[in-house]
Length: 246
Ligand SMILES: NC(=O)c1ccc[n+]([C@@H]2O[C@H](COP(=O)([O-])OP(=O)(O)OC[C@H]3O[C@@H](n4cnc5c(N)ncnc54)[C@H](OP(=O)(O)O)[C@@H]3O)[C@@H](O)[C@H]2O)c1
Image 1 (cartoon, rainbow, N blue to C red):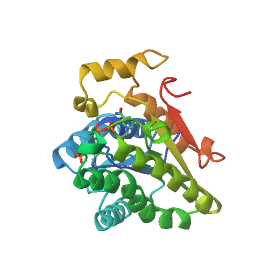
Image 2 (image 1 turned 30 degrees about the vertical axis):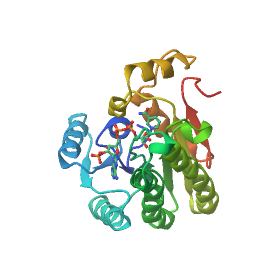
Image 3 (image 1 turned 180 degrees about the horizontal axis):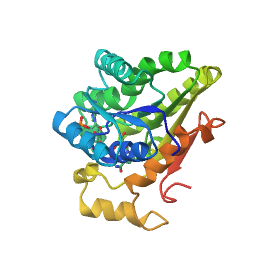
Image 4 (image 1 turned 90 degrees about the vertical axis):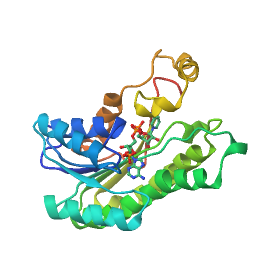
């Protein structure tokens, strides 16, 4: 088990990539904090983790709120005594042409997908530095590397996260903390309900391996970055897109 004895906070783990990562981490021996904004969804994933023999604590918190994130980290530290891994994954999906995009949509995406990383990292870096060990993994998207039409807000938030993660990686390396990014292409999660079948088919056609990604494939990469084996890897962006971006 590659994460035995570790505690991981995975934001947005009540669904999709975060849920798969929580289940995978639990199978690798980590205790996990399950987060989202919907108590029911959180409780379901907590039960799923327990069903595979893991220990999970569900905490409802909006990652866009500095106060709620700090309270979540405090609760996790009280429960487990230490917090070793952060997967900053929570994200919202809006698909909107630039001329129809509202200020509210822009602010929501930037608050969750960019400021959420600041809030979560700001809360965990102190405790990680005190123990001279930590792993931070931010989940972005290839739209943050390439841009994508109708996603100017998401691309801005994801590209911003790339700069944020590289700067933080340099700053905290001497404290035993690594900071890496996984930038997935299209992955099979509930987010896809926001896209038409034709849009998904057009995306898939452009992927050399001929299919969209599975949540477990992103979770596997998270295990690597979270593990002891990745101690010499920091400030990196792993593009996981089936060759969609080469
Ligand atoms: N699926 C893809 O094709 C794809 C591709 C590239 C990148 N990504 C990225 O992967 C990450 C996960 O996406 P997913 O596809 O797994 O989506 P998902 O299934 O919709 O999961 C999103 C998770 O984030 C939570 N969340 C949303 N806003 C939140 C907030 N303000 N505070 C706390 N939790 C919040 C959601 O729970 P609640 O709604 O209950 O709060 C849910 O648990 C996102 O950052 C996304 O941008 C996804």
